[in-house]
Length: 313
Image (tube, rainbow, N blue to C red; front, side, top):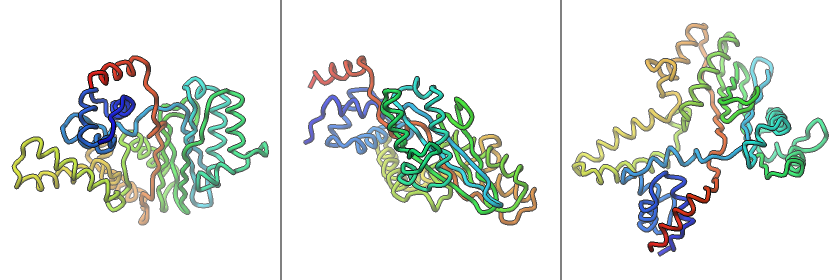
């Protein structure tokens, strides 16, 4: 059996928000497998880790940029990390994030973006290295995404903006098809605000990762058993919960936050009808939230709590 160390318990505690002894028990039950332990805690009704696991804090900024291209548009979003929020508030850091987002308009992969040339002649990676030397903190251009449409708009939205185009959550929404661009951009911005709030996992039901559905089904089945549901009813109960899960995480099926009487899919269709557009559709979205999946070391009080608990082994 794997050794259940204090560090392992701390990691599970940070991801799940569950008490120390329950984390220790979950790790013992799953032979030290963090992901399995999270599922075990959820099945026991002790954790909402699936909703928290990607919200571990890290500092820095998300930046967005957009520009017209013929009848369409292209937009990009990047995540640029630093060690402290103090550095993220620095104008030098913010300007670098904006410059990287602009370069993202012409580069469709993170690797290509790292090698992109800035106006100074330096590459993006060279600029990151120079900033590290200047500011004295570790930094990383961690993620980049790009969307484009040949006709229509790619709307952008930044939540918790610290200056124009940079903040803690950046969203791109691509609407492809004919129609008044100002009206399409406003629709795209509203949907982008919705995406920032709801964090959907996929655009359409068919795009949802089958592995994510199967994992959710396994957890829900185990939870139903723990709750003592009749064995012959569990499959039907879980099917209903899976349908709700899909509605919750698929963008086109979600109720629009500004008007829950219509789904995002209906909102686009209604707007297309108003604009007289026969081919308008939601082509894609990107949501980058600062620090998703980045571990952050807890303070000394938390470590002391774990050390004390582990002493009881």
